[in-house]
Amino acid sequence: RSPLMVFSSILFLFAFLPAVLAVYHGLRAVLRPLAPRVWQPVRLLVLLAFSLVFYAWGEPRLVGVMLASAGTDFASSRLATLLTHDFS
Image (cartoon, rainbow, N blue to C red; front, side, top):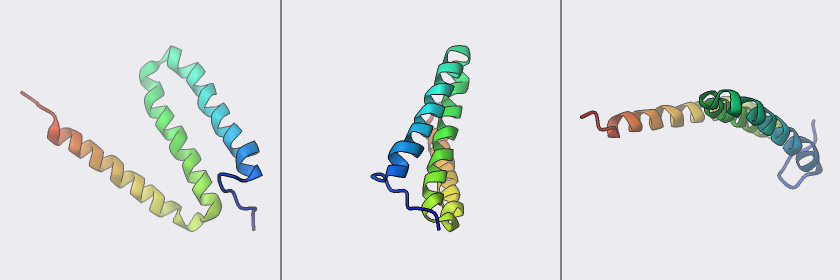
């Protein structure tokens, strides 16, 4: 069994968090100046991917539930945006 990764663990503070910050800010430095419209969805996908890795570290069986929840939230927010948009 792999070591636990909680927010206060050495593994999280000195391995996972620096990796997330390096990837996030590295992509930001490259993509934002070149293609600002591309950065927004890439940013969200990077954060979603690292979130899934973090939570799968503790309980891999629940990754499907997390993906379903994220998909449902995304679809609901898109539907709410469409329903509240003024088309006149």
